[in-house]
Length: 197
View 1 (cartoon, one colour):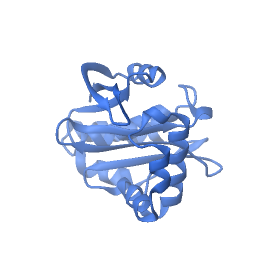
View 2 (cartoon, rainbow, N blue to C red):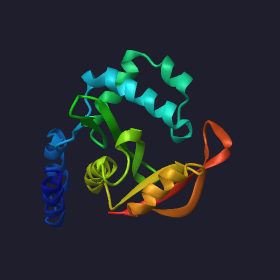
View 3 (cartoon, one colour):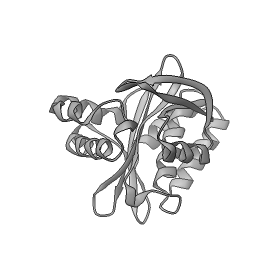
View 4 (cartoon, rainbow, N blue to C red):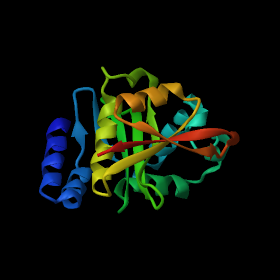
């Protein structure tokens, strides 16, 4: 099913109707035998919060906030993050397994300096890898959104997160040679990577 939606998006792009078709697809959920994908909404705030805390505990240097900062966020903040799934120039996609467990997420927004920016990437350890397909499915969904915003997708990844760097390289991202200091530890850097869409 996801492949059919992705193919429709690619066809739509070739005839110049990127944004309108993406917005229709974004509202629909995508289901496989083991998980489904959908955009987040305001009422998902508890799940958004719980998954974010799981993400930070799993790989603390992968995110721009500490666990302590995330634990201090109030309900209004988590609701705002849930609404990112329906933002005009942004997206937040979640993968949910057949039991209802949130197993992964990716988001994106338009950064004035680089255009479409991939952020908030996480897949639960037991759903990682090409065989599970969760990472690739989430990325395809974010790439479909990014095509409505431009012709490339940019990300920043911590220089010591070799697992993530390899996963991005395997999915077509290349390092630009640019880096920015990591906000939680400015003695280390986040590397910029891009993928042409």
